[in-house]
Image (cartoon, rainbow, N blue to C red; front, side):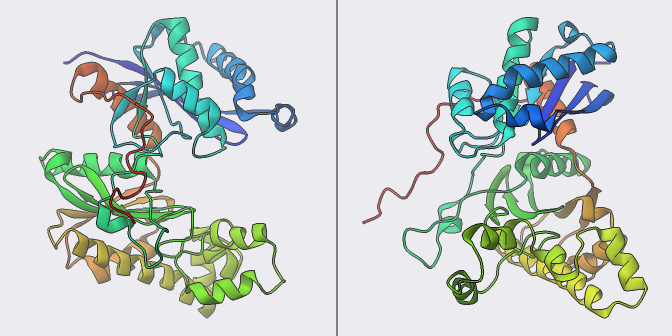
Length: 370
């Protein structure tokens, strides 16, 4: 047997922090630590929450008998950084500075790097970010839109997307960098990517209303009607943004984004629920086909992941329309904590060379723009 590495992983959310400890790929501990919402509101800036969140995490670990001095590495889901290529990044001073500032997003996810850096300093093991949400590997062609000065950037479920792609590549007996995949993460949001030889070269902007309709997001809609809604006087800016990013999709149409509830509605004869749910699968299939074209038809597999991918009714519709393109592999659920642990193991074992975060964006516009 090879060496056993103990990896501590964490992922900060709005009011809680997910924790897990792995021995290589084996989960030995997990928890979701809830933080007092009133206490969180008392901090002026998100980064000010650091000592409080750290204290509650340590208390939870203490109750479980987990000693952080036993860890070989600390890894985290952490955003707010400038765009970068995918990979494993040791937490450096630039990462800490940009995390504290929240360069690209103001969300508690910026605390990930700060928390594991603190644990690293106290316990003497390295801290790594693994395929952060700010990864952007798009090709130039994927960035262009029909409006000059408005360009597409990568906003997808990078960590889970790359993890399931690596798993399927291993199952095929290949390296991730040798394969081409179309990967769809179907959760509350729906991100779909074209992955070519280890890079996400195209994908939908899951945050800003691009791509297939999702459980609680609108996906792509005709622009002119949206513009008219914006200027109708009936909706505020925040209400319109919510229609795109929080209350659209299945939720906006039929009042729920829960796949199990929707299946019950369909089984009871709700024709509208069936139409809308089927439409989401239909739209996803259209994007799968378009990304197969991005890969010039050289597709080793189509991968479905995220919570909705556990639903056989939904998956069967995708298989019916898309299995002619390539084999379809399903990894239902979310593997982000496993991905963080696997990245830590690859870094420690030398299977993957770590990269240095410089703070220089992977893309900041075309040099030849006039």
